[in-house]
Structure formats: C-alpha cells, structure tokens
Image (cartoon, rainbow, N blue to C red; front, top):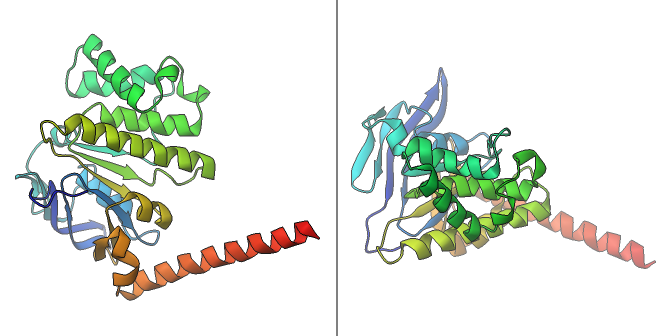
Length: 280
C-alpha cells in the first residue's frame, strides 16, 4: 500500500496532449505514491494509453509538468532530460509485448541491460536469470517467442522491464486480447512481480510504484490500491479501490459502472438459464 510519509514518486500537473486539432489529454493531474498500485480506467479512446506514453516520454506533451521523485523531467511540455535516461527509471510494458522474434527469451531480457545501462553480458545474464526465476520463466529462457504461450510471453515482457529496476512501472492493457486463463496467468505474474520488487527494495526503502491501464474493472478492484477514472482527457474520479463504487459522482463514471454491472447481471442470468436447460 502507499506510504503516506513519503512524497509521491510520480507527479503530473496540467498535462495536455494534442494531435493536430484533436485534444487527447486536457489539464490532467495525477499522483502515484510510493509502494502504490494505481489502476487507470475509462471508456475506450479517452487517452489512457496516451497518458502512459507521455509518462514514459514516448509522446511529447503539448503542455504540463511531470516529476519523478524530486526532479522534473518535463516542464511546460518540454522534456528537461534525455528521454532514454528517463526510460531507465520509468518502464512501460505494451499490450502486445513487442518481443524480438529472432532472439531467445534470455536475449530479449538481457538486451536492454546491455544497451540501456551498459551492463556486461555476464552481469546481464545473472540479473535476467534472477528476475526470470521470480516470474516463473526460468525453464523457457532458451526458447524463442514463437514457441511460448501468450501467458509466458507476457511474463517475459514483464521480466524485460523488471531487470532495469525502474522506479515506476507502467502496464498498458496487459490483460486484454487474451483468453480468461491467460488473463489469470497475467494477474498472477503482475502479483509475483510486485512481491519481488517490493521485497527486493524493502531494505533500502527504494521507491517503486505501478500504474496499470485496464478495461477490466474487476481486475482493477482486486489488484490496485487506488483507481483513477479518465473522461474528457482528464482524471474525473480518484478513490481508493475499496471505496470507488460508493464515492463516484461524475456522470461518465456512473454510466461506466452501471454498464459493467448490467453486463455482469446479464452474464449471470445467461449462465443460470444454460444451467437450467442442461438439467432438463
């Protein structure tokens, strides 16, 4: 859970993002506390993934400030440090993993260590093996991406981000576009990653936080400490996950939650009807 005695490790204020005449993010503000898991939810197309890309310096904001710990890395929409240096501290795992198909799993994991932080090959392998063990993928290190399952590929992508020891890890729709079984595997992998990172950094009290963009509200409720709801390009609701349902007031958030609850009710009714038919 969040540590209230430590200032936010990631602070966003007044973030705007425009593509030509389209305003994607508008005056968005957000904090991520130390040791906190934050879920960002909202309807499709509201800018959730674009927010992560801005945080990871993959998109240039139109305006706004972003701060990591006590240092601004973006002021007035301009990056104040080279983006590649920021990406050593803010990791991003994409929805489709982006593994290199012509490299083994091990090489996929060690490559950023060698290229980004200039680790030697032997040190990179040791770090990769340690993280792989924590995420349960030690047995596939010599395989290629096309010979592993979707759930395993997700764990490899997490592992590749983990070995750089980021202070903030961003996960973009990592449970979407997969079957329910693989989605459950992914949730378990994220939980394993969290326990590994927090346990590994607890002695030195190193900062670490996680932001996950998701369309799966039940996952957000069960996994995250806090939930932020985006609408109109900004955060309009921000509550502890166990109090989110009863505290929301924005019409878009209420409609979103009502739609989820209605869908769940229809699914339960359908399951009940199928069960009744099978017993006839």
